[in-house]
Length: 344
Image 1 (cartoon, helix red, strand yellow):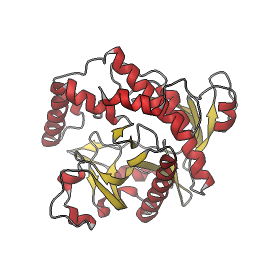
Image 2 (spheres, rainbow, N blue to C red):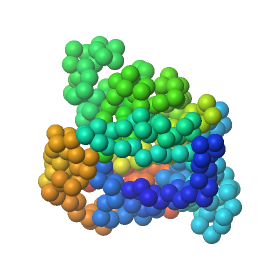
Image 3 (cartoon, rainbow, N blue to C red):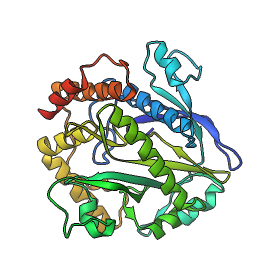
Image 4 (cartoon, rainbow, N blue to C red):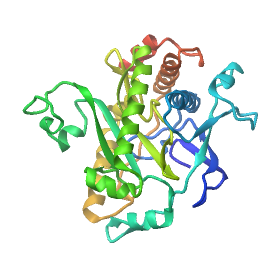
């Protein structure tokens, strides 16, 4: 179980072969790495499953290897492609995937044991990295505090106060299984990737970014940034987890966010004490070498108002309808949903 989807193993992976399982998408959501929040967003799970499956099929059509096998409807064990599922007038909430091994990542004496992870993984494992790509640098992007514009070939002495659109995407690597994600230089990322080739990971990230960006543009959405996760098996790297949804990536429409970022920013405005407590707990955990930062957090998030939940639901559903080019969900137009979100 992750914070937003359940993970079901049907046939476990071994050192010699991939297994089979499924993601069952829920209506839960998470912001600021908190995990499951105290309320749910209706239809969010079906929205993310639909958009993720659509993207995996786009990747396969463009010869990008993935772990995706299809979707299932709630009343059947049959594995379908997305078009078959939607023709039954039902948005799927279950995605069937190939499984790889995910060894334990030990944490001792203030550091993570990647040598032990790879020692247990053999040649069939989930690469313990997130490969992040950015098409623009937002005003609040962490990239501004970690790097200078010149580091990316940009002609600025300092970061400007407005959003910076990039001619070429920036690709970065961050940890996946640590309690607090941290960005890595290429040498550290290469070491953590194990046998998997870091250059191939970057190549796949750029390919995925290109395909998702093109598809988003057809719906007048701007694809701002996102990430992929990958597995390594039998000498091949395949795109894993879920790709190009409103939770994994940031999209905007007419300057307004159409992603989980809307809810993130709403919490910043309406529950600043909790957001600040989360930040303080993470910093304390870093200082003390503690993995479980949540145990140090003195505040907890409060549920959202019902009208906010409705706006979030409509944004997910209208955005998915626009992205896949169909009326999968009963939702307002994307114009209307974005307008409502901008008033939160």
